[in-house]
Length: 403
Image (cartoon, rainbow, N blue to C red; front, top):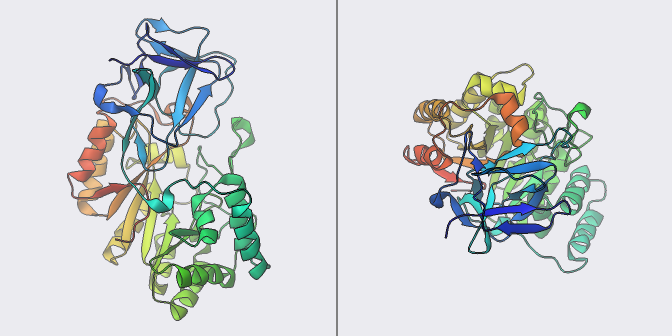
């Protein structure tokens, strides 16, 4: 059976229209192909896009609101919804808006599974269970501001890496920096007031000491043999601005324990600061970027005092030093899969063979993003973009892996 329109009313109730064929947006507005659609996976979150009318093969579906779906971790979005906004349409909050339709009376999405990890599977807590774990742990180390921050992130934001600190599993968060040297238009921790889109998270307000960081890391690695401790989280700015504190924390960790992986999530803006962390014993680094093209990168990141060349140089440095290097690629259909983007990506990855490209849905209003970086000249489809990476022998995933 072919795809039919899924939409919402103004109260967010979902309906299917068997007589209407929906259109999707992949940089150009078109119908979704059968090989781009899968049943909405467990953990998908349907969302109403208020005052945004779905585009269909027969025109604009007036008096109907567009539906989008936020995908669970481990899935990569292939298309975004196609719609026409009313003049009074409010700004969309910072979520990943994926195309959705109906097939055989079931909700389907344009997505593909790109990774699996038990440590990132949503966990259902018994009433008060997480709160009890947090209370016990913070009581043991009451003055530790890292614990205070990750406790808040665990409860208020549902952050898995923060929760892992208390669950004693997988990758554990080590937020460190309140400042940033980029002004990303989709920043999740510090939005400019004029955007009309609230920040989903509140940024950490203080500079964490090496001692506080090391205490959390050592506790985690004592209990999780193959655990990962990660500097650089969504609740902070750029960790390389605190590279001295990070290097000192790594020194303390490695003086006491040799197991596990010490990871850094960064925008890669300061190669010399990254080198400082490497010299202290950093094992892995995940460098975020939205594009391998200078203009597209700058339009989104709006960097202060650095350029895309610095970011790519950080990747070169880390690969040369034999770290496990991942690129945290902020993907968006119609940008990531533009022919020019794929060409630039191939050229860099041939030169710098990173271990993995982690595809990460860019959480932003699609209209806002296209308005900032432009629409593609020749979108080839997200499957083609991912295939270009695999053809170079580079793994694709969504999570931090130790091998």
